[in-house]
Every structure is written in structure tokens, then in C-alpha cells.
Length: 416
Image (cartoon, rainbow, N blue to C red; front, side, top):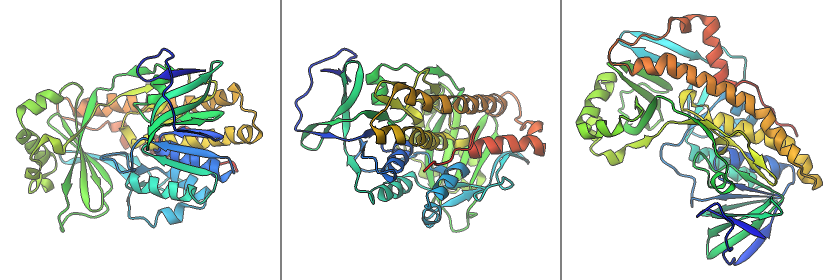
């Protein structure tokens, strides 16, 4: 038996384990991709174990947008109405305001779908909802606080993992291990996968400001651009989440200039917040997101499949990361359920998941790159006044970004 360790890529002596369990599918990562895949497999009576490194699902400034395609998937599972009972806001249009001009980047309200909007729902609530549904099935097991340290490899086939958790080290053996552990995937590193990276021209500072009783309600998401600065404003019901977009590599210079300069810039971009920007008193209140975009040339090896951000990291343009991660999970469940039930999982089954999802991923990343070049770069150019591209005002062209943001390149359906 050989074990690949996180400390290096060579095979090392295994840690002693206090117990070992078996399952049909071990999913590492309790984000949207992992949680939805676990639910779909559990519904098919396939034994599945979901491992999450944190002790709860609550994380600051995670993506909180559920696109129409996700709501359609929830509807196919009979869960959409129940999900929408949770507190949420709706975004029907993505706009950007530059001075007196407001341009609509994407209008979802005219799309032919039961859910012509993006649902803004705290991700912690979504993950708790999905895992609660999965726990209705006796063949589902959720392990929180499971820090995966090693993958088990026998005869060049991934046969499971070892994780550090309650009481020591534990082993999980399975014919299929799925890496759904995000953009900094531990399993991707352990398995020796190297993504192809691009360098988007921006980074984002995320922070929150309190609501005022006089603030507009249910305003969704909007952008403000002026003077080489860009601010994203998201209505989160009981507070405002703001994303201050900066040129890549300029974060330290901004910090050195003092938080007062950030306060001033935010107040100029969004005057309605001028009365509360002083509540940003320290950089510890601000979360820095280094924006990147990447994808793996190959998403699998015998016994191991990577999906979601572990396979392809998305730029935040359009907020499509969760959308694509869940679509990956649906396709994986569609393709792999029968082989897992029949105990005849082949490498070509894993290759089929990538085949169905790779081109939609390339298309949306190309779209994001175009939006970055046409909008973000212009908004961050302090040498000229930003004006949104005139072509976006043509209804026929405005529908293209709306459809790509809402559904991706292809619509995905659950196959029971």
C-alpha cells in the first residue's frame, strides 16, 4: 500500500488510524458541489460520506448567489419552494452606474424560466438546508472537522483517504473519491494535479456596512464606477455587503495609504453610505480576495474525480462559481450513479464527467475574460472617464450575458 502525503508528493509511511470505514463514494469538501452531489447520490440509495474540514458551514464572504439553473435543479428535486421559505433577496438585473449613466449588464427578468432572478441566500443556510435533506437518507454520512491528510493509493488507483478528526486519524475506503474542496483543494495538491492559470486584472476587498431604516429594500446587486474605482453593492437583507475592486497587485499600496482613503472612496462611489463608512475602522474588518481563473487539463485519475473549484476556479464576474459547481455535481451524479450501484466504475465514466463539463467551463471563463477586458479594466482606468460599452444596451446582445450568467453554456437536468 502506498500513501500520498500532503507534506510532499512522495509516498510516505502512513499514520496509524483509530478506525476505518467503507463507503461507495467519499466526497471531500462540504461546499455547494460536495453537498449537492452527496444529496443526489443518497437519493439514489448509494452509500456516501461527505467530509468537511470546518466544524460548521459558516464562512465569511462566501458566494451567496443561486442562479436560475440552480433553482431549476432544486425544483426538479422538489425542494425549491421549501428553499425559498428561507430569508433571501432577489436580483433581476445586474447594473453598473457611472456618474449619471446607468447601464444594464444583464437583465434576467425576461428569461424563460420559473426563476427569472438570482436568489441571494447566505451559503451557510443553503448548505445546512442541503445536508439536512441528505440526512433524511440512511446511507448518507456527514463528518465535520475532517482534515484530509493523505490519499490511499493501491496499484496506482485511489482507494480512499485518511483524515485527522475527532480522536486522531481515520481512514475512509471507497471505489470513488471526489475532490470538491475548493480553490485551494488539498486533494488536488495530494494527487499532483497542476491547473492552467490565467491572471485576471483585479482583486476584491469584501466588507460589510450596516443597514439604515431608510435604505432601499430588495435592491439586489449593483456596481458603481468613477475615478478609476469600482464598487459592488449587494443587498444582504440585514446588512450591505460591498466589494471594492482594485487593480491586481495594488492592495498593499492601498493599505499603506490608510483606511481613511478607502472610506472616502466608498463614500464618493456610494454617497448613501457616507454616514456609516467610518465604521470601517480597521483592515481586519476587510477580507481580501485574490482573483484568479484556472482549470485543470484533466479532472480525474483512477478512483478520483475533481469538480467545482477544485477542477476550475472562476473569476467572481457574474457570480457563476456556485452555479457551475452545482452543475458539475449534477452531471457527476447523472453519469456515475449507475456504475456506482453496479460496482463497475471505470476510468471512462470519470472522463465522461469532464467531457460534458469542460466546454461549458471554457465558454464561461472566456465570457468572464471578455467582461473583465470590456468593463473592469475600463472602470479601473483612472486616466479616462468610464462609460459602459454601448453594445450592451442592445436588447439582443444584453440577453447573451443574462443567459450565460443564469444557466451557463448549457442547461443541466437531474436524471433520476
